[in-house]
Image (cartoon, rainbow, N blue to C red; front, top):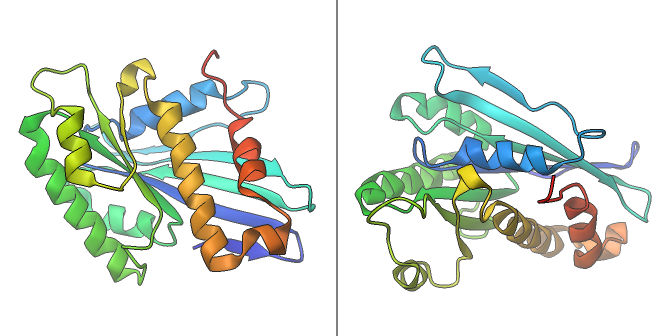
Length: 218
C-alpha cells in the first residue's frame, strides 16, 4: 500500500494494470509512456520471458511535487496474463493502491476475462488487501475487433464500476481510463489517510499534478 516517508517527504503509490493475456495491458503502458515529455520521462523497464511475447512486468514511473513540499512518486506495473505466470502476478499485486483491469471486449474472451478477475481477487485477498474497497476501473479494450460486447451491455453488467472503451493500439481510451484511475485512487487515499488535510493535497491538485506529465498529442 501507499508508502509515506515523512523524513524525505516522499509518497510512493503503486498502480497495477491487470487482465487476461493479450488484453492490452502492455499497450496501455506503452501508450502512456509515449504521451510523456521525452525530455523528462524515465525509461520504461521491462523483463522478458523466454517466449519474447510476454513481459513479467512493465514499470513506468510518474512523479510530481505538491504545494505542501511532498514528492509524489507513482509506479505503474503490468503483469503477464498467461496462467503459467500466476505466481508472478501475485507478487506484483502486493501493495497495490489501485487497479486498472484491462478486459478484452470480444465475446469469445468472456471466460478469460472472468478467470482473470477471479484470479486478481484471490491474489489481492492473499495479500490482505480489501478487494471491495480497493480503487479500480475497468477498460474494455479491442473495440475495433469483431463481435464485441455492446457498451450498453457492459454498463448494465458492471453497474457503478467505472468502465471505459478503448483501442489501446491506437491510443484510444488510454488517457480517459488513466485519469479516472487516478481519481478513484485519490478518493481511496482520502478515505484511508485524509490526504487533503495531512498533505495539503486536494483531488484537483493531485489530478493536475499527475496528468501534467501526459499529452495525447505527443
